[in-house]
Every structure is written in C-alpha cells, then in structure tokens.
Amino acid sequence: MATQEQVKAFINKIAPLARSEYSKGKKILPSICIAQACCESAYGTSSKMIAANAVFGIKVGSSKVHFGTAWKDKAYNTQTKECYDGKTYTNIVDMFRAYDSIADSVTDYYDMMCKASRYKAAIGETDYVKAITAIKNGGYATSPTYISTITSIIKTYGLTKYDTTGTIVEAGTIKKSVDEIAKEVIAGKWGTGIDRKNKLETAGYNYSEVQNRVNTLSKVSTVVASKTHKVLIGDTLSKIASKYGTTIDKIIANNKAKYPKIKANFIVIGWVLKV
Image (cartoon, rainbow, N blue to C red; front, side, top):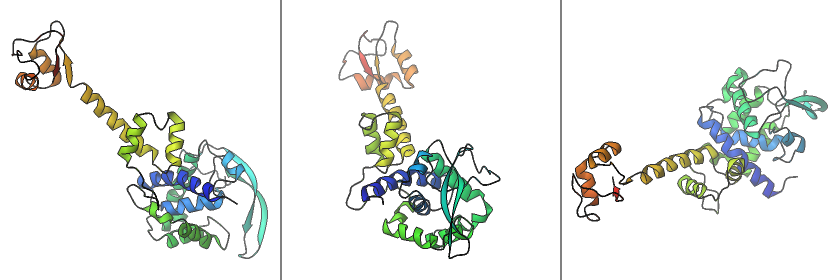
C-alpha cells in the first residue's frame, strides 16, 4: 500500500501533465485522469508499470490503434483481472502499452479518450461522476466498482481543484507564483535539464508554463542589458540612435546629468550611454 508521501508525490507528478493536456483542448477532466492513474498504478508503486512508464492499464489491443504519436509500439505483459459477468473476476495475462516517459503515457491516454468515439460522452463533461461513468460505459474497465473507486479517489484527495485554471494552492501551503519560480530557475535553484523538470513537477508546478516564463524573463533581461552603449571609435550619436531605434535628443536627455558636456556632435570614447 502506498504511503501518504508516495501518494502526494505521485499526484504532484501526474497533475501538471494532465492539466497541460487539458489546456491543449483535450477536454477530459484532469481529476479523472489523475484518479485513474492513481488507481491503475497503485499511486506509482506498481514497479512493472513504472518500469514501462505506464500509469494506465491501456492494452495494446489486436488492432494496435495509434491515437497519436506518444505510443511507439512498445509493450509489456502482465497478469490482470477482468470481470466479464459483473460478479466474478478472472485472472488473465495480457499485453499493455509501454512508453518512453510518463508524460507520453498521459498524452496517449488523452489522445485515446478524445479520439476513440466510444468515449465521446466524456469529452467536455464537467461533472466528474458523469465523466467517469461515460468512460466506464465506453468499455474502459470491467470492474463493477470502477466508478465508485475513481470518484472516491477524487473526493479523498480533492482532485477537482486541478480542473480549474491558474495556480493551485495546496491546503496549508503557500504556493509560489510562476514568476517567482521562474526567477528561481534563472538563479539556478532548480537545477538543469531533466533534473529541473522532475523537481518542478514533483513540487506541483507546470514545467512548460514555468519554462515559458523563464524564456520570457530571460529575453527581457537581455533587452534591459542592451539598453546601454559604450562609445567606441567611429561612433556618433546619430549612429547610436539609429542602432537602438531612438533619437539623439533622447540620448542626450538620458545622459546629461552624468555627462554634462554631451552634445549632438560631441561624445567621448569610453562613455557608457543610456539609450
């Protein structure tokens, strides 16, 4: 059985991935996706599933239908239980989809839900009970208790908060804004590469959202840094103004206090002008 720490860490890993897919117009509630992943991977403690980067029990199927590009024909076999008569469980061995990453597993789940016609009643449904009922009735699972299991997970962990837009604030904690986290990333506090991605997602942040803000802030910093110009041999105020898309008068006004002798036809090599 998963510990509370494992449950929290797993939800924090899956939630931003589900919200990211949902934000792309794939309208299956994130709370449903997260709860199903929790149920089917035992909150990320199923070693065989995690080794295959699979957090859903999506079978390969005889047709090997590709709903998108996230699944690349990888598979693993394992024992599972099916309930065909609504009462009795039968042990079987079947082939399930494996992925290059957990993110691909979530993407493939959303692609399947949104492209397989049997789940169309769940698309855009904002009532999570109706949504998971539509998914169950579409043939996703055979367990007669599947609907109650998923809804119970959603209620227990308050997963409907992930169905909203904006920053999620956990109970008892103050979650930093995307701007604050982006500035910490720029300062090097969250590491680099995949290590940074894992840390951000484990902490419950949307990696793509944070990275986009990092890129924006980095560009702004570059622009701000470029708003000064060191006078070099051959420079004139006319050339400098043209280079930075400003005017001679503005450059003079910006620098008069520091360089009282500055004029339209007089600057000194080595001056650092505000442009």
